[in-house]
Amino acid sequence: MSYPPPGGGYGYPPAAGYPSAPGGYPQPTSGYPPAPGGYPPAYGGPPPSSGPPPPPGQAFAGGAMAPGGYPPAGGYPPAGGGYPPAPGGYPPAGGGYPPAPGGYPPSTGYPSYPTGNAGPPPPGAAVPGFTAPAMPQPPGQDYSGGMPGQYPQGGQPGYQQGGYQQPPAPGGYPQAPSAGGYPQAPAGGGYQQPPAQPPAPSNIYSGGSQPPPQQPPPQQPAAPKPQAPPPQPVPPTHELSQMSIGGSNWAPGQTHGTVVAAPDFDAEEDAKILRKAMKGMGTDEQAILELLASRSNAQRQKIKLQFKTMYGKDLIKDMKSELSGDFKESVMALFVPTTEYDAWCLNNAMEGLGTNEDVLIEILCTRTNEEIAEIVKVYREKFHRDLEKDVVGDTSGHFKRLLVSMTTANRDENQEVDYEKAKKEAQELYKAGEKKWGTDESEFNRILACRSFPQLKATFDEYIKVSQRDIIGTIDREFSGHVRDGMKAIVMCVRNRPEFFADKIHKCVKGLGTDDHTLIRVIVTRSEYDMVEIKQVFLNKYRKTVWQAIKSDTSGDYKRILQALVKKN
Image 1: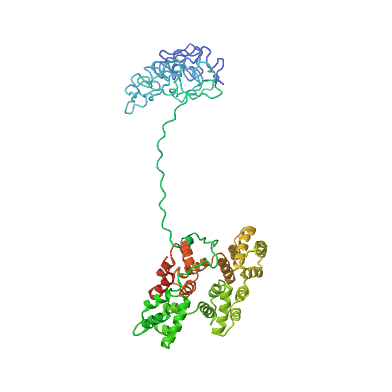
Image 2 (image 1 turned 135 degrees about the vertical axis):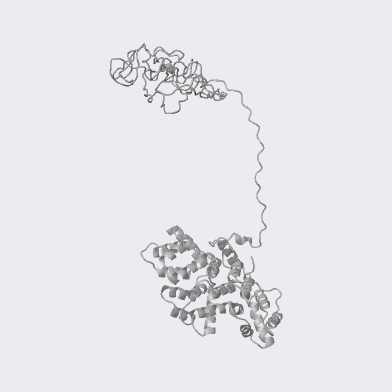
């Protein structure tokens, strides 16, 4: 599309073309004719033109102005500085765009404007004084053949004369300097392409011959790979480090205590040591705790009997009179048989006002059938009371039913797993809890109290597949209070009993203060059963040892006897 002149009557661009100005770019016969003075015209009249009269608003010869305005008679852009550049500079010195008498810029460079209040020079006026530095062509580049993708200009093949043209900004486009400016390429073509790269091998479709195969560059020797650190010494209990906290590798009977029976045990000699430690003024607590922490519970019972035989005195009464505080409670717990100590803890939890439900859960929900049956028997012998009746009198609701189920000591202990039953009872648990409005607590109680630990573990695994939830999460959502804690304790012992007791120890020592009674009970009762596993789980889960936890929360002989029982890792 071309811009028709407002007045009409002649075409755009003029048919006769724009003649080249002296020294300007060579133009084809049909190109835009530049005026000798460029655009805009210099003072003194319009430039001569061999084309049609200028449109309205432009000056005729002699200075007369034609009515109208834009575009100028010389067209846009002027051909005097056409593109691609011709020899002699870009733009030419004699036909710049817009040139004025003397050229813009002059052959001596860019003008310096006068200072003061004279104002800017009129359009086209030359102000001498400023010379622009030359702009060298980048090294290795030759633009004599034109820029890549550049359209050919007027007269060259493929160029259409009637394309869209944009109007110049007021005052015309400023041109680059001619003298000392950009070096120009020959007029015969545009900028040359950069030097050609070595030809790529012709493909199978080109029909050309294949170049000789290139030799691969010599390979550099590979950097040495970083070496793995040497393996660290494996501790004796390295198998425990592989134990899953979730309990997948834990099994009853595969546990280890930190307190073991002394190989060269002599009850009489040990009785003498204890007598000497308590005789006279003061007490040698260090001798007492070192001896007790290195003897098993069964050996301590023999020492107690031997002491009475040798000195006719009750060792426990003498200890009570010589010791005090938490250290005395720890020593008394060590001299009591394990099941008797559990029975004493249960009676103490329900005696008087209030009930310590955490003790009931810890003992009744974690012990085996044999241990619970022995506890019930000892409880009756020592306190002349029935354990089940005391539990019923001190608890209520579904929590009471759960504990009564535990006191029966009637859990199935068959180690064989019935996987079909596990799938069936997983569905029943899902229907009793997550799948219905409300909860059927009796169904949970039945399965958790009757099935063996291996069977329950298979059931809990199937429950995840059925409900896409973990049984612990379901118990948290469906239950509350102590019955929830009791059921979670059973699940924890099914999966990993040492983890349950590691959590108990952590709860005793975290925060302000220490739950000394629970700490003593857990360490004394587990020291011969699974304290090695408890320590490992505690370290994996809480990033410190049980020995260090005891050190930071206890003191004196009480601290030393607990540390002697758990031993350092």
